[in-house]
Length: 132
Image 1 (cartoon, rainbow, N blue to C red):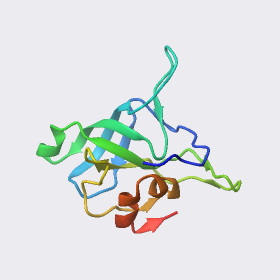
Image 2: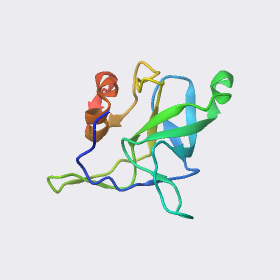
Image 3: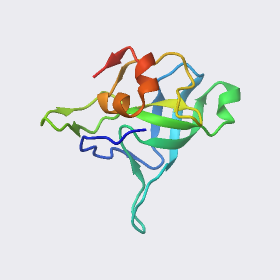
């Protein structure tokens, strides 16, 4: 897992409902924690593109609904500023489920993936169809 060079504005709050963009059986995820988040007292927990989050499955297959998997944020609506000055934003907030070794659990990803995520998690870039 590498560091990200861009200025990632954290656009996903604690408790946010986001799409699951892979084919694991989960449809909607609810974020309840961010791995490695260091914050201030009484400040709301937030996540951005490339962050690992812990989530609960709100909609999906009955087996998936019992799990509390880890996921990587691959898209967010809040715009991201890149080092060359360009800004990019997506239509929705989405994540991909990962295992303990930070490899995707699914075999395909629906929709585009941010370039910052592919730099950090190369295994997600291998199964992504579109990298923006």
